[in-house]
Image (tube, rainbow, N blue to C red; front, side, top):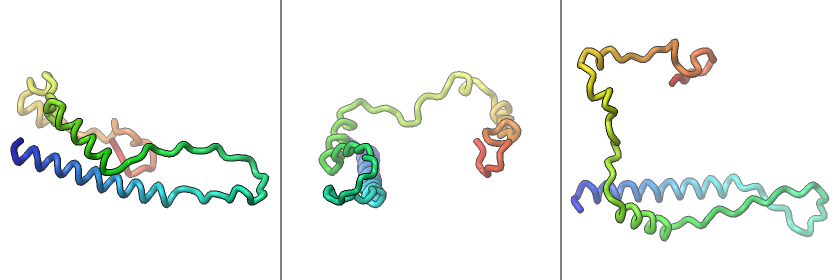
Length: 112
């Protein structure tokens, strides 16, 4: 394994761990308080939400082993043939058309 691919793997793993920590903190902060079972509250029962599957260092290590065992797949993907066949002038003529954008007829500041 060369330095570039091992650095990429380490960067991906560290990002995954950071996102997992953030997600865990957000989910813990967003969970509604549980009423004590003997509170005598006769309000309608709320459907129990199933507990998420456990997530921790072991799951990250397992995922890393799966990724390492799989054959390398270029993250850039493949370029469509029509794009490979255009000329410089055709490439240069590709423009964003605001009139054809999604949400162009709404007050949103975002367009795709």
